[in-house]
Length: 322
Image (tube, rainbow, N blue to C red; front, side, top):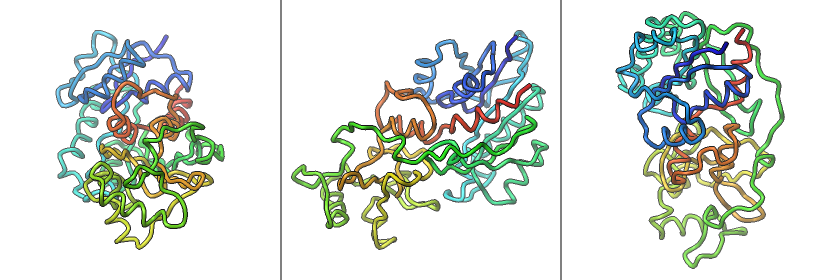
């Protein structure tokens, strides 16, 4: 017999990938999601997914016919909690969606629940802990992937320990053949290489509106979540910290811009050239199958991957379900 699952803020259904990877059988997987691109990717990979729409209109009674929900999961929007955000806490309407998770937990009384969120101020963390009745577990997905991604997990699943370190680095997830469009170019179309690469990137981005919104400064480095570009970043930080493939990538975020979802560590110094991570490489950072998000634009792929879960961390937690 399998379990029934309700995934709030389902995104691209990383939860289903994690359940499969953990060997947990499920009968019905109900997904509350409103982003049409995320829904498209979910149904491409899991056509039997039952979408129940906006979480604000989902009620516990909807699941009486299937015998209720055994596992309630979600990663509520974190923009109001994150150290990288504006610290609007529960007054931010996106962060207030957390209370929809609380409401459904109360209505459904699932055997198990799991809520994921970013590291945040202790006062916000304590509020979530009070409502859910359990202390969070902090896990960095760097243990199971090539990405530094510290997250908090509130769950009543027992016996969770830290995952064993797989010692995966960027070099382990890089594609062998990468399309030229992921490389930085100067105004005459030549790849930017060599000693003056930083100045060349600065000049290139000033002269090309297509590349002007690649990166923004944030609390955890640099990510593409707004209009500030690499020129501003260089002014603030005095230099561009180009990383080699011997490092971990920094945390993917949900910025949806033409440059994708990249922080300072996501600009790779690669054989003397500078390029972004590809969507497939970002999928690998989230421990998703290659081309899982294929079928929509790169902009949407970067956005949904940044908003997604590190699957192997979730699978590690699910393996403790009895």
